[in-house]
Image (cartoon, rainbow, N blue to C red):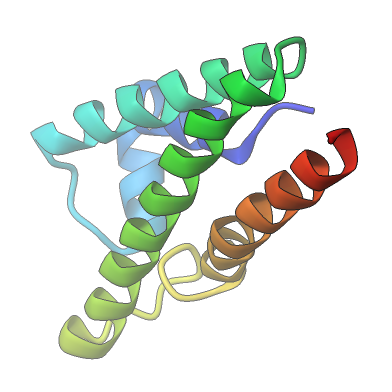
Length: 115
Protein backbone atom coordinates (compact mmCIF):
# COMPACT_ATOMS: atom_id res chain seq x y z
CA UNK A 1 0.00 0.00 0.00
CA UNK A 2 1.28 3.43 -0.88
CA UNK A 3 0.64 5.93 1.96
CA UNK A 4 -1.66 8.89 1.23
CA UNK A 5 1.19 11.27 2.05
CA UNK A 6 3.13 10.00 -0.94
CA UNK A 7 0.19 10.65 -3.27
CA UNK A 8 -0.39 14.09 -1.77
CA UNK A 9 3.28 14.91 -2.32
CA UNK A 10 3.16 13.64 -5.87
CA UNK A 11 0.20 15.82 -6.76
CA UNK A 12 1.58 18.92 -5.02
CA UNK A 13 4.88 18.53 -6.91
CA UNK A 14 3.77 17.27 -10.33
CA UNK A 15 0.26 18.73 -10.63
CA UNK A 16 0.30 21.80 -8.35
CA UNK A 17 -2.62 23.54 -10.10
CA UNK A 18 -4.82 20.45 -9.76
CA UNK A 19 -3.86 19.91 -6.11
CA UNK A 20 -4.38 23.56 -5.17
CA UNK A 21 -7.73 23.77 -6.94
CA UNK A 22 -9.00 20.63 -5.23
CA UNK A 23 -8.21 22.19 -1.84
CA UNK A 24 -9.64 25.58 -2.79
CA UNK A 25 -6.24 27.28 -2.58
CA UNK A 26 -4.10 29.28 -4.96
CA UNK A 27 -0.86 27.75 -6.24
CA UNK A 28 1.98 28.82 -3.97
CA UNK A 29 5.77 28.30 -3.89
CA UNK A 30 5.21 26.61 -0.53
CA UNK A 31 3.19 23.93 -2.29
CA UNK A 32 6.40 22.39 -3.64
CA UNK A 33 7.85 22.34 -0.13
CA UNK A 34 4.82 20.60 1.37
CA UNK A 35 4.86 18.23 -1.59
CA UNK A 36 8.47 17.26 -0.85
CA UNK A 37 7.64 16.83 2.86
CA UNK A 38 4.63 14.65 2.01
CA UNK A 39 6.56 12.56 -0.50
CA UNK A 40 9.50 12.13 1.88
CA UNK A 41 7.41 10.82 4.76
CA UNK A 42 5.54 8.61 2.28
CA UNK A 43 8.80 7.03 1.11
CA UNK A 44 10.03 6.60 4.71
CA UNK A 45 6.67 5.04 5.66
CA UNK A 46 7.01 2.56 2.79
CA UNK A 47 10.56 1.68 3.87
CA UNK A 48 9.39 1.21 7.46
CA UNK A 49 7.35 -1.84 6.45
CA UNK A 50 10.60 -3.83 6.38
CA UNK A 51 12.10 -2.29 9.50
CA UNK A 52 11.80 -2.75 13.25
CA UNK A 53 9.22 -1.16 15.54
CA UNK A 54 12.00 1.10 16.82
CA UNK A 55 12.39 2.46 13.28
CA UNK A 56 8.62 2.88 12.94
CA UNK A 57 8.25 4.94 16.14
CA UNK A 58 9.55 8.26 14.76
CA UNK A 59 7.74 7.66 11.47
CA UNK A 60 4.45 7.24 13.33
CA UNK A 61 5.23 10.21 15.59
CA UNK A 62 6.07 12.52 12.72
CA UNK A 63 3.14 11.46 10.57
CA UNK A 64 0.68 11.77 13.44
CA UNK A 65 1.88 15.24 14.45
CA UNK A 66 2.04 16.35 10.83
CA UNK A 67 -1.52 15.08 10.26
CA UNK A 68 -2.85 16.99 13.28
CA UNK A 69 -1.17 20.13 11.93
CA UNK A 70 -2.63 19.60 8.47
CA UNK A 71 -6.08 19.01 9.95
CA UNK A 72 -5.81 22.18 12.03
CA UNK A 73 -4.89 24.17 8.92
CA UNK A 74 -7.81 22.76 6.98
CA UNK A 75 -10.28 23.45 9.81
CA UNK A 76 -8.95 27.00 10.09
CA UNK A 77 -9.36 27.55 6.35
CA UNK A 78 -12.89 26.17 6.49
CA UNK A 79 -14.02 28.31 9.41
CA UNK A 80 -12.03 31.50 8.83
CA UNK A 81 -12.01 31.62 5.03
CA UNK A 82 -15.15 29.60 4.30
CA UNK A 83 -13.15 27.05 2.25
CA UNK A 84 -15.37 23.98 2.10
CA UNK A 85 -13.73 22.50 -1.01
CA UNK A 86 -13.93 18.71 -1.09
CA UNK A 87 -10.23 18.21 -0.37
CA UNK A 88 -10.08 20.92 2.27
CA UNK A 89 -13.13 20.07 4.34
CA UNK A 90 -14.31 16.64 3.30
CA UNK A 91 -13.30 13.00 3.20
CA UNK A 92 -9.55 13.71 3.03
CA UNK A 93 -9.80 15.71 6.26
CA UNK A 94 -11.57 12.80 7.95
CA UNK A 95 -8.91 10.37 6.69
CA UNK A 96 -6.17 12.71 7.91
CA UNK A 97 -7.69 12.77 11.41
CA UNK A 98 -8.09 9.00 11.40
CA UNK A 99 -4.40 8.58 10.56
CA UNK A 100 -3.41 11.09 13.24
CA UNK A 101 -5.24 9.12 15.93
CA UNK A 102 -5.08 5.55 14.66
CA UNK A 103 -1.36 5.28 13.83
CA UNK A 104 -0.15 5.91 17.41
CA UNK A 105 -2.83 3.56 18.78
CA UNK A 106 -1.77 0.80 16.39
CA UNK A 107 1.88 1.41 17.21
CA UNK A 108 1.23 1.06 20.96
CA UNK A 109 -0.74 -2.13 20.37
CA UNK A 110 2.08 -3.55 18.24
CA UNK A 111 4.61 -2.68 20.96
CA UNK A 112 2.51 -4.40 23.60
CA UNK A 113 2.14 -7.49 21.44
CA UNK A 114 5.88 -7.67 20.70
CA UNK A 115 6.89 -7.67 24.39
